[in-house]
Length: 85
Image (cartoon, rainbow, N blue to C red; front, side, top):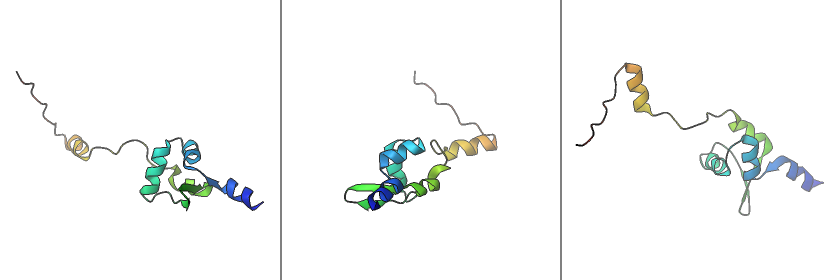
């Protein structure tokens, strides 16, 4: 009975990745960044099902390039590179 409680409450990295719709590597990165808490048992990281709510509404994709955003907002254009002749 106690075992069933833990099995229902905790997920492996792969199971958490499937629920979040990301790769297991991305889940591991969320753990390393401190955004997703884990319980370490032996070599395994177990993630509480309730803790998935902490990262469910995260921004997706790569961070924007700050230089490009500022240039676009200020109306400045970045010069094109000239091809070598």
